[in-house]
Image 1: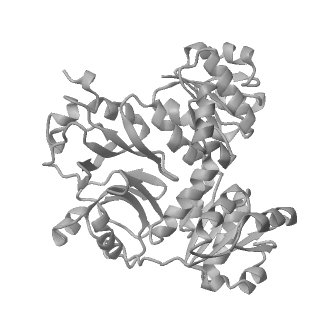
Image 2: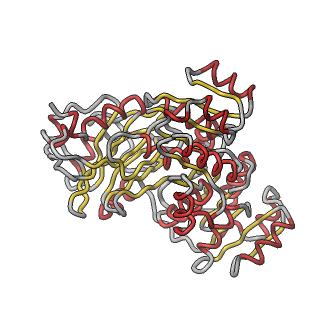
Image 3: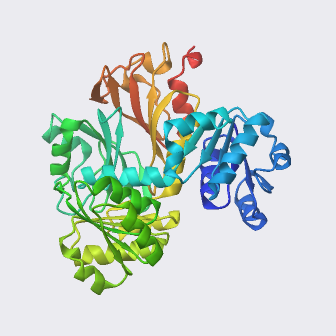
Length: 451
């Protein structure tokens, strides 16, 4: 697929590198010549310096041959104009990043589509919604639902007291013959791998698991995790993510929101009905203690400063907060943040990638999740009629190296993948895959590739 990415920094660069790994032809347009030179020195991506909303710049990028134009600059107006102009100049499909929640209303989407903007994405809104979902299952480090929760992805950090520590996957299966979940990946010592039956869980592993709803209690028990009922929440940062999170939660939760900017606090007071707004610096431990941090069920740091979010979460954890969530915008910091004890990491680049990647695949993909800190994806693909994946049982399939089938949804029922299971037409299949394997996985699900 020929893809043009318009960006002005890390979001565009991260998307470009990720999509290039999946064998797409990428051109990136960015106004910063020095940043593009750095990108050119480490990749084969074609770069063009300039304003992406300028028709001449888009023509230089051969937008008329683009299968997909993605505009992810910080200025939403530029993104909308870039997508609209690009569509008029011949781009087959366009995606624009926006930050204003009002732009996501259906009436606005219809308007944008009439202007040539096919899809809009708001990382800030998706981030807030992800946080809310995480609080519903606070014992997990990361969660994601497929097919409305018929199957779910859980990521658990395994402490030394977990039942599974020192046991292989085969041993766990023998001791628990009715497992309703399956480990699809393990992250250990800054490296992810797909486990075999002989692999043994170790303390501090991050275990990625596909589970049915009824398997969640058993999963948490084996991982020595206790579900937390979240009632009292402290949020640091009153920007779009913090405000939306508080707005959605304040009706049924006790929310305290700390914001350092006095003017923004005044706006938050007008917008939020039941949230207690505190004008102060959350790095001040005395302030946290005076606001009863020790009794908080969840502490959420979503300022624009990654270091502040990490440090305040560490303080909150030390002072007694039960669960910590940090917005970490520097991807290289994700591994560090997870290793020092922060429960959950939110990253807008990965959120953008999860949304946008669905439009770059040739197979029918209904859901996609880019994993935090791991260069891998979990995707839900629909099996087409007479596609290779429907011809044999799972154990007989030639599953591409670097991928793993975790579960299947059929007729509104979830199944954990086993070797004897045979996938049928219209099944939705949840697959873990590293970038190098994704294009090969897609071929298994497409009719035209069956011979």
